[in-house]
Image (cartoon, rainbow, N blue to C red; front, top):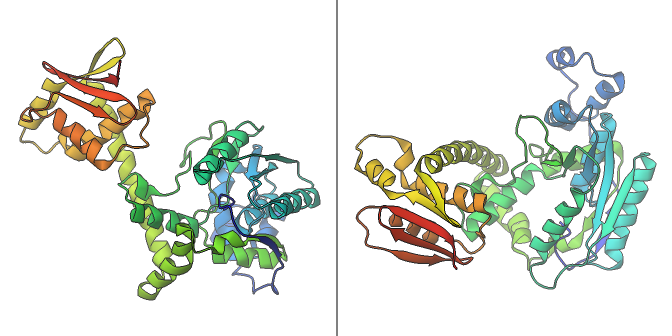
Length: 373
């Protein structure tokens, strides 16, 4: 949330603690009866902790990681949860220097919290360009975080953040890949070095606040998050409350859709990779070569195989662009869709230029794709 350049921050003092959630049921206690007593005791503070444990215990316990802490409620709650569960972490803070003394106040708050918890603390200050601040901040932040010592990087994104991200992308225009929202580097697989994970993605912002109140833990509030000039803020403060008047559980509904989109996209990407492997021929210098006759045979089929569906063919080209590290920044749906037409046997196109200096040529029975010479 520090990507927005305006506003001020203030430290939030917790209100009187709310009633703790229900204690662990017998099945939960039985399943985790080998845990240290301090972890079991932490679970009784609020029901929030039950689901945090389910999110992080399998991957985080037993290895050292990095928790990115801005000072806001979400990241502070994540840090406190990791600390309560005995997870070995380094506290990392990036000062984007967008709000002057207020940004410095965030850094000081996080440093003090790390000291109170007796956890190692690292921080950095970055200077951002005057345009494209949000993207530049994100790129610089993760580049720095990945240079720190740790098996994983955890951020405090919540279910509310997920809903806001998906709605933002829908408004801007997106496809199945964008509907996934915030996607961690891992699902249920093994951690890779510097995997980015989001243990709170199933937790709502209200549960985060409830948990912090139970700990009487203060946090910082960036008032630029209240500025209606930013689309994401309008989604948070205007659109989602409006949608809740139609469906009070709209945040959960959008999160379910994002999960289903993730599952569908994984299947689609797998099929697209297989399609590319079958269609690709030896390179012609720097040019990638695809066998158009392979696609011609697919289009001639009357079967119901998914591989020749335009959706899968478009994704095949995205896989190719990503593999070759060609820029996709200015590639639109129309561009991807036009690529599917270039492989069809009945469309009379020969050459086409695409954003990022990529040229596609029809040469006999093949399609050549690569940077312009």
